[in-house]
Amino acid sequence: MIALSLALALQVAQPALDQVPDTSYLSLAAAISQAQTGNPSLRAERAEARAAGQMPNEASTAYLPTITVDVVGLRTTDPVAVFGSKLRQGVFQASDFDLDELNNPDPYNSFYTVASIEQPLLVPEGWLGHKAANRGASAREAAANRAAGATTFQVTQAYWDVQFGARQLAALDTALATVRAHAARAEQMHDQGLVTGLDARLANLQAAEVEVGRVQAEAQLANAGSRLRAILGLPETAPLVLTDSLGPGDPGLCANGTSECDLTQRGDLIALRLGVEAAGYGVDRAWASQLPFVFAFGSAGHYSNDAPFASGSGNWTVGLGLRWNILRGWAGPGEVNKAKADREAAEARAEAAARQADVEVRSANRMVAAARERVTVAERADAQGAEALDQARLRYRTGISPITELLDVQAAATNATLNLLAASRDVHVAQAALDFAYGVNDR
Image 1 (cartoon, rainbow, N blue to C red):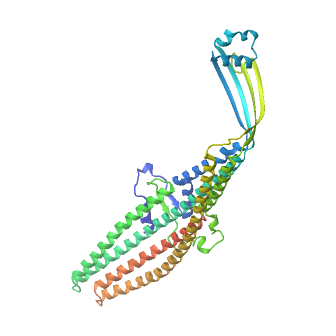
Image 2 (image 1 turned 180 degrees about the vertical axis):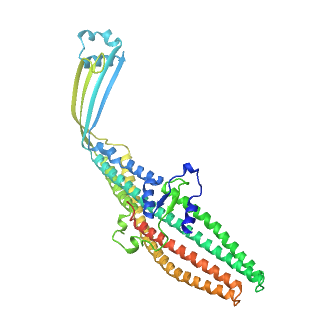
Image 3 (image 1 turned 30 degrees about the vertical axis):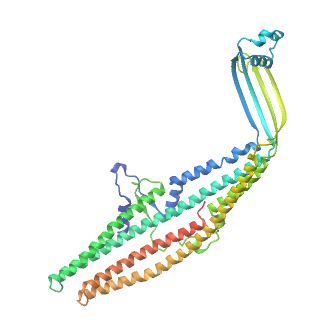
């Protein structure tokens, strides 16, 4: 009954037979694996982390040379351009000193190719910027890892919501069949003159109440299935069969206090710590921007009148340079003060997150303990409910008690079963929440 209810609930929309996708049989581990590659939000997080991972490459100009090549063709009557082009091409002649030729030259072609290189030698601002970029890229990767841990938790929660919904629906089906049996029994006893017609009406009223609850449970199960598919990155019509049962199951890593449960390895806390380091380098970089930097440079060019790389002339240049922006108004001190404020904010955010993480761990531990205790209590109540229901049936059949007692016991027994199912679901989710609070799945 449970498997059938689950299969029906998870296959809400049945496409044409020639378009039915393959049914996915998923354990919780398989569902998590599917989400790690199929969840669109997680894919976006990882893509953004890869993009941020290029920041150190963008900042590598502080260490590595910059090489440019210009290939230009032009035709001009500009006196200076014509004069310079002839000199560079090695075709300048004495007749070119004619004043009229100098002032009013004929249109002239110039093609040149120039390769230039600039190599930083001493660039403190760039070095510190590269370090900040490294920390920033690592922080973004850690944040993406935290998103992976959050996805694992979301899958776990949705998975057990579906399993709970299926078991709840099955329990209500059983309860509905039982109450209808009570109504049929009351009708028989009424026909025999043993009870009034009120007994059957009361039983039918309770059956209607159970049926209303069943309709709601069926909708909740369908919604849980839709949430699970969305997290897994699967279409709504994808048939799913979940193979892990809603039982005691794996207690979770952190429920047993393993060595992997270390808050210092939680993704968002790592990201914030790296952010503090990046902000610290930002302060140093702001100071270093007030200093000069030294670089070497060189260029080689080829110039011709007919076409690029045609016969002509070439030259080269090498040198050392120092560049120092001595005064930029109040921009320099402003950058330093802003960087200091950014570092202070990063430190405060990291401290607040660490405190919040500690609260989350403590709260999750309490919820695990409470959920386990609820299961223990609910198991006893479920067993007692089954025994009480057997006794109530016998008392009603023998005329010792009215049907109201039987219906009350039936309702209590049904609630006990539903409470046990809810407690079992909550144990699984609470254990997953504890693992998430520690960040053990931030990978």
